[in-house]
Length: 101
Image 1 (cartoon, rainbow, N blue to C red):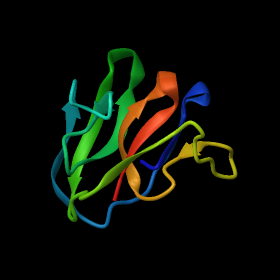
Image 2: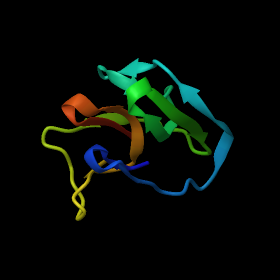
Image 3: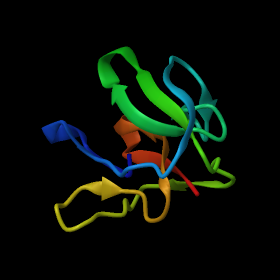
């Protein structure tokens, strides 16, 4: 995932070049004061009401992260997207993402 438009239940996704293992559910990992996939993994989806993240380890693990939000990077849709890299965490009430590269 690289972006979310939660008010319209829309997700912007990319294809991973390779993966290590199967997707898994994360129910509580925290980084940057938000729910995030375990370090090195990326978001594949989420269930906001249950605060669940679908995560997976890419073939090339995430090695650095930053917070995108306030102001949020937007694409042409407009949709909040990571300015670089992929989503590794989210906090919708503050419109913030953790983005990993």
